[in-house]
Image (cartoon, rainbow, N blue to C red):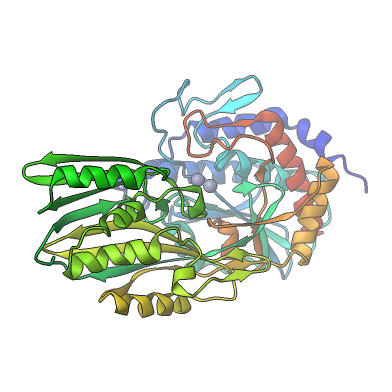
Length: 466
Ligand code: ZN
Ligand code: ZN
């Protein structure tokens, strides 16, 4: 049977946009202060879940609402189950919008609204793909469950709860990222390295801080020192910053000197894209004799962390042929002379290496600077589905047929619902070359791309369950 997927979807354009508009009008931002037993993340995410399931029910799907936290709509029968995992919660709108973020509007072919590209637009596109298969009455041999989450943007507690009660699908995809396809997601783990406080007899480091989040390269660093002349610091600092990609400043303040460094922020997925203000400030302070815990804290940051995103200084450079490098980001620095210090390090690691090997390499160095490595309790293992897997081949085949562009798999440092299934990937819905407006002001998705994605999803689902 020859099905004209794009034509079939375009005939359903008005209905798709009407349903999507209803979804986008719901301010489904997490608000636990207004939460209740049956709406854990607040009334917005709950209302969006209800709406999605109501649409499914209207169209004749079997639906299940799991405690107002997650839910699914189901089609077909069979021993194997395919999963489509999407989410209806959205990031807070934030400032800088030209239109009202929860009043969807189409301008120049772009549908503007919070959630248009992440993830209500792609989710609705996948839903219309499934709905098309149902309407055409195509023969299928497997079950499909479209699973809807309400807490993707923070802790994924929706999926944790859902999968406590329901079985995992055998394979599937999440329409919550990019085309062509993401078949690998690095592991993610963070460790704290903890230091003693104190200084020697001479100059003193009173405090030191840099970075706000472990998954970002710190842009700003600031330290306060005493027992040294401002003039001397200024001379050293000017010379130090001369050939470096940073801005620096020193000033006197209540008999202590404040030194600040501005570098460049970047996502921890690739620390090389940033300039770590924290390690630069440590490198500068290393020129001053400090002694005790302060000196150990500075030595660690300057000698081991500075410009070492691949852990060469720890003797642990590791790379996987398909998933790329192990990376380290020194995301948060804190030191106070009276309390001690802490550096929080975030690692993205490919298959072939484990969190325990990273911890071991850290601990070896930590002993040398009288520090201790402590777990942060957060760990995600790497996820990888072979490019040869029939799931991946089928999805890329459909993508190539419908777009005329080359399909390929990508490995990313972030996480999507795809990783929840052993044979799970992320598939769409952002097309290569389109600006990524997810989580930003004026988020939009091209109407044409929503329809293109829906047609791809329709054929892909059909190929996978026929
Ligand atoms: Zn998303
Ligand atoms: Zn998001």
